[in-house]
Picture 1 (cartoon, one colour):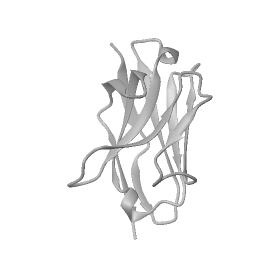
Picture 2: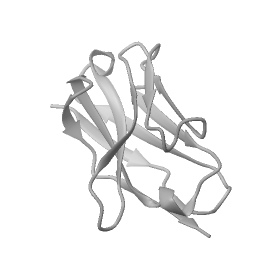
Picture 3: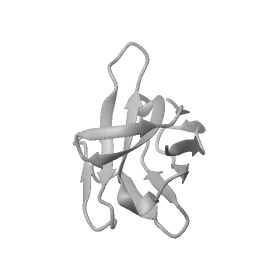
Picture 4: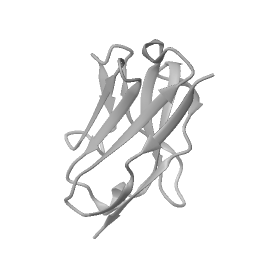
Amino acid sequence: QVQLVESGGGLVQAGGSLSVSCAASGGTFSNYVMGWFRQAPGKERESVARISRSGESTYYADSVKGRFTISRDNAKNTMYLQMNSLKPEDTAVYYCAAGSSTYNMIYWGKGTLVTVSS
């Protein structure tokens, strides 16, 4: 059983930057594909970014491409999401997830709220 804990959310002005982290425990971190998802009020959860087990391959949603960077440190059992040029529409609860493949996320964190003010 893998436990995931997000941290680093908060309030930031539009155009600003914020970094969120996901600390994993209870499993072999490098065995899992990892991803960041978000859910805005009144909207469905969407995939933001994903990263392969080694960290060599990444995927970004079109809405964040060029602004967000996903990374992981397998030695520290931690995944990161660096968010730059934030927009009000980036406001959401950000969740980290771990799974056996891109479309099979098994473990989820409880989320961290990111609020971007205009």
